[in-house]
Image (cartoon, rainbow, N blue to C red; front, side, top):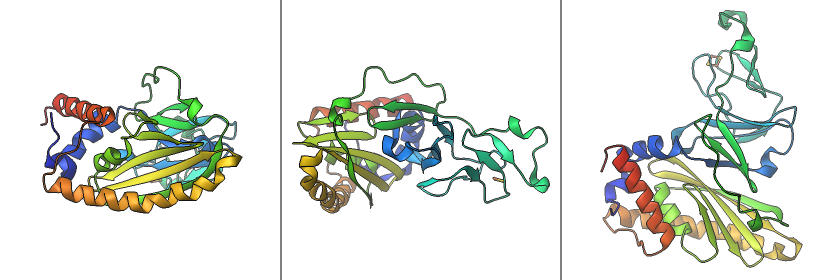
Length: 277
Ligand code: FES
């Protein structure tokens, strides 16, 4: 199946991907450095699913739906931060880093014991330098070992985020080709360029808006390569937006690279499973 223009431009395809892909697969929410200390947390909503991951006071990593149990409204509002508790700004429910409700104003107090109210858990799996989460709390772990060779002996020396006005698949099609590229379906791409490893996390936000967060791993000798690898994101964003315009005009994707062909095959299967075309 060749993906059509509508798959890159319309909300119906994104809605299908939201349920068939992003609600089921392991998605990269952070690199380990972002959750190394108690109190550190990150939040994101890949595909529209609000997710939150935090390092507890006990040093244990946990992930939750980023939705307050009182009225299912967004809890953490920052992309990343450091806190001892999550305080819901709407009516004042407060959770500790294990996700347990620990305080609520009398006017909005839950009927039973507060300890019975907990944020809904997500699956969480450390994977090499990455922290992966899954909307399904009991999702099967990823088989096989992580590509730790890609970041072993290196440390994160730079990171940058860009937002592009394009569909997530358009951006991914630009990142997947190349020889020293490792791809964890659907949203994680690792690329080795000499002594530098580039970790790209893709966050589909809405059908035509996609966030890319790039982390650079390098040893001491390769630090000169950090800035070019981050600066190139401006050009990549422009290319993605131009490619998006081409897709919207019906220009099909170049599928000769095995990763791109696999991306299309997986999506075709997802659309078929949902009864979409
Ligand atoms: S929605 Fe969070 S306290 Fe009401």
